[in-house]
Amino acid sequence: MMRYDVVVVGAGHAGNEAAAAAAKLGTRVLLVTMNMQTIGQMSCNPAMGGVAKGQIVREIDALGGLSGIISDKTAIQFRMLNRSKGAAMWSPRTQNDRWRFAEEWRLALESIPNVDFIQSTVDEVLLDGVKVRGVVLQSGEEIACSKVVLTSGTFLNGIMHIGTRQMNGGRSAEGTARGITACLQSFGFTSGRMKTGTPPRIDGRSLDYSKFEVQEGDERPGTFSYWASKPLTKQRHCWIAHTSEAVHDTLRSGFDRSPLFNGAIQSSGPRYCPSIEDKINRFADKTSHQLFVEPEGWDTVEMYINGFSTSLPEEVQREALQQVSGFEQVRFFRPGYAVEYDYFPPTQLKHSLETKLVDGLYFAGQINGTTGYEEAACQGLMAGINAAQSVLGKEEFILDRSEAYIGVLIDDLITKGTEEPYRMFTSRAEFRLSLRQDNADRRLTPLGRNLGLVGDAQWASFEQKEQQRFHVEQWLDAQNAEPEHWNAFLEERGTTPLRQKGPFRSLISRPQLELSGLRAHLASMEPAADELVWEQVEIDEKYRGYLEKEQEQVQKLKRLESVRIPAQFDFERITALSIESRQKLNKLRPETVGQASRVSGVSPADIQILLVHLGR
Image 1 (cartoon, rainbow, N blue to C red):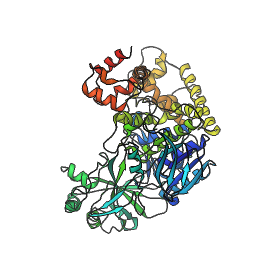
Image 2 (cartoon, rainbow, N blue to C red; image 1 turned 180 degrees about the vertical axis):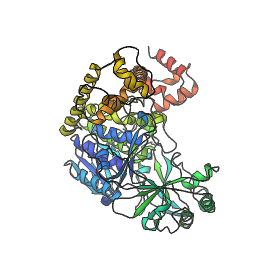
Image 3 (cartoon, rainbow, N blue to C red; image 1 turned 90 degrees about the horizontal axis):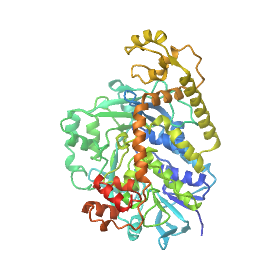
Image 4 (tube, one colour; image 1 turned 30 degrees about the vertical axis):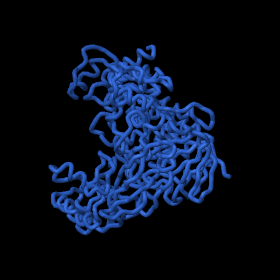
């Protein structure tokens, strides 16, 4: 019988990060995939990052994960979203070459000596009491292991819908995974159903681009990775088109055959990424919706129509798109479709992503009710780390809400659960001023280094950047602002002149001024530093007052997180707690008072009562 330390089931974004992390930390890993040709497949849109998601990719990179590097290697366009807003909202996004993205993931995994591969499915998890002892493959072969990371995506009992047609499968032209759901249910896990969807893929040669609005990449493109990537020197365009009332009327004509409306689909879909039929039904007052025409790679003519996710009959999809300006002669490569699949409510997990019922079993990705490549990838990274840490007899690795968007995501899932596909937003992070895309390396790279995931080259790059930052901070501290030198400059830019000599830093915080302009007006020789270092210093200075207040809230959170709740604590005996609080706390079993405070239905008064009973 073959034996491994960790078996990772599924080779999507979650599974790949899990396998890479566990292997790089020194454990022997088997990656089980249904199809060796679709490792790292971008099942939906050919893009990485976006609002809040870009922050997650930066955090993965800072910890030593691979998603950022692979996204940069295969990028065909880079944009920093939300530049018109505050720096805490800036979010990097790449358009990617779908085929090269998958190729780079496979090559990256093959370059890690401790990762083995097998093309199969896992039909059963084997236990020794309540501990994992192995898995059973589709062939009946048993693989011995002490840890299993399940990253099954949309394949658990997946059913695809196109109009009234239904097909078994978790992705176009691929099969479904059966057996695991029933196996997990036999262990006592509860499951549910969720839905996601994808738009049609189009022959780009059939479109009239003169009727679209061009969406270019940044003039000075950046990268996701802090250390291993070079910016693009050329980029591909995307385009924006618009639906109309005529398009909406055509779509409505197929509603009686839509699985969303005729009862064929009963499960919840992503609220913030709805299908086109759901959008025109929910927002009936809107006469138009944006469509984003996105190329699938450098050389292909295939186009992804972002914003037109649908499960309507194929002929309705085609007729509706033909009424969009520029799509009159559109030719389909394949229609859009919806997928229903099994998931397991994440309140059944610990913060390490290990299940509460079975020791050594970890869930990551869409099996936990999330949607999105980035959300899946960061869960895979954390599950892979913790599986390896457990094998090696080391303590679990958990990020809290004040340390990373990854910590926010996992804490939301564990303490609140989800009944619809969970997607990360900046608004979910109460400490988002500190959790920016520009400083993920400062927050997390030392942690990744301590784990053993951050190699020498990445660490040297980080130390060099920190040294530059130190010299910039020293130089700024040495500068003074004198009225006779600055007042004409300040009045020209519409800001209050100085009354007396003061620290130069006080000028940086003014919203009318930019550090680049201030530097140009200084006579002192500035230290050599990357422009990204100067930008980060400026952001910190402009946010200084807010960051100090945020840190006060962080300390309050950490005080609550430091108060542990005994594993067998009986919440029912505290009759002063509301009935709802007692029921939810007994069900979810929070490990700390901080976690208990974030459980839906638990009030601040309940937390005070709980603290009293814990002797605090």
